[in-house]
Image 1 (cartoon, rainbow, N blue to C red):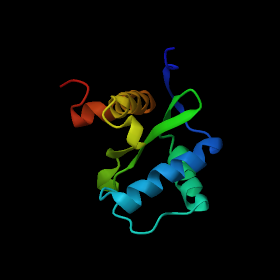
Image 2 (image 1 turned 45 degrees about the vertical axis):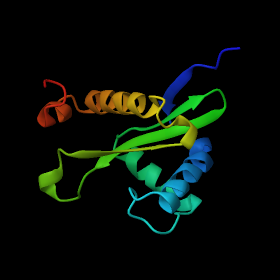
Image 3 (image 1 turned 180 degrees about the horizontal axis):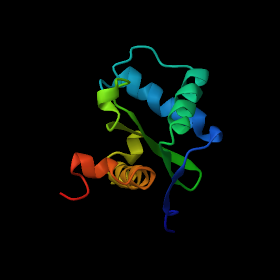
Amino acid sequence: MSQPALLIRPSTEADLPAIQAIYGRAVLEGTGTFETDVPGADEMARRRTEVLSRNLPWLVATRGDELLGYAYANYFRPRLAYRFCVEDSIYLTPSAQGQGVGRLLLAELMARCEAADPLALRRRGEVDG
């Protein structure tokens, strides 16, 4: 029997428990978050709301009922000189690592950032090479 197809879609509030679990593991076992304490559910919801309020994407990758990972873009720094810079963040479950899920999340994240601001990726040279 084949697996359900991988779906990349905008996140919803219902995804927050899985998002928090994935991020919590990254905080406790990884080095990329630069955090030492796992943020609570309210803090993760606040972060997601902040990203979405800036018209930036917060995506999830699912296969069937399983959330495999998430990705979002947020402004790199609050100073005016950085107004054209966004930073991507991608977090995956262990089972999704090495399966191409992160690559697909990044591709969709970049496409949605470009759709929101067509010049943004060109400024970085990502679209035109």
